[in-house]
Length: 351
Image (cartoon, rainbow, N blue to C red; front, side, top):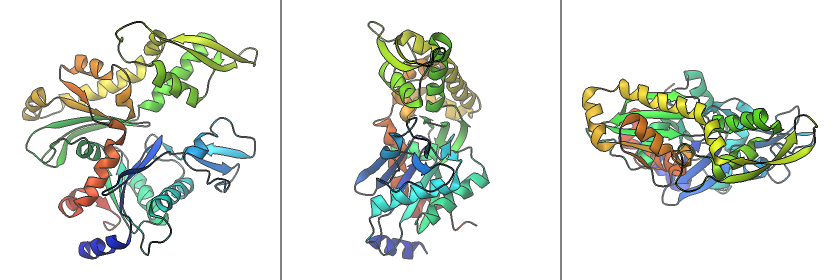
C-alpha cells in the first residue's frame, strides 16, 4: 500500500499541514512553506455557505473579523486547537489544499496534519474526515510536539531527552521526547488567544474601552512582554469604543501594564512546563540539564518568555529558528520519512 502511495505521489502534491487555531500553514517537500494564512472563513449569516466573493477564506476573511455587516459572519472554525465547526473546517481545508495543489492533478494529495496531543478520539476523527472530504487521498495525524521537535531540528530519535514547548494560538504543548517517541507530554488550552483575551479584559477594566481581537493581537506584538525589557518602557496608542458613551475613543497604554495583564496566562504556561518536568524520569531530567528546552509556536516570539521560563525551571531556554513554522516543517519531514515513522502516526487506514 505504501509503495502504491509513493508512486501516486508523483502525480500529486503531498503536503504537511499545521492546522492551527489562528493560522494554517502548508509545507511541500522541496519547496518549504507554500501557504500561511489565518484560519478564518467568511460565511453568509445563518448558514455554513462560504462567501464566493474573493474566496473569503484566510487573509480575505481575517480582514472582515469584527467588521462584517449583518448578512456576513467571519468565523474561526477551530477553537483551542480542535474543530468546533466541522463543515466550515472542511471548506477551509478544501480551499487551502486546492490552492496549493492546483486543479490539474489526477490524484488527491497525501496529507500529514499536526494535532494537539490532548485531543479526544472523536476530535481526531473530525480532523481525518474533514481532510478526506476536502480532497486528501490519505491522511496521517502526528502530534504537534513531535512535529515541532522535528521541525526545530531536535535529536528526537536519539537516546537523549529533547524538550519542546510549543505555544500556539489555542493550545500550549509541552513534551519531553526520546527514541522517536514522546516520554512525557502535557497539553493545556491556554496560549496566544488567552493572552489576547487578557489584554481585552485589561482594556475594559482599566479604561472602559472595548477593543477587538485584532487590536489586542497588535498590542501584544507591538509592546507585549513576559519579562522587563532592557531600556525604557514603551507606549502605544489604542483605539476602540468607549463602554460608557458608546463613542469611538483612543487612549495610550504602556508595555508595563500589558506585561502585568499577561501574567495569568503566562503563569498557566509556566505551571504546565514545571508539571511536565516533575513527571519526567530521572535520567531524562538529567539530560535536560545539558540539553535545555526549546520554544516553538507564535507564543515563543513574546519578548522575555525565554527568560521567565529559564528562571522558573533553571534550564537553558532557546527559541527555535523561525518558531512560527516549526510544526509545519516537521509535518513535511514526517511525510518524507513516512515509511520509517508509520508506526508512530495515526491515519485514516487505522479504523
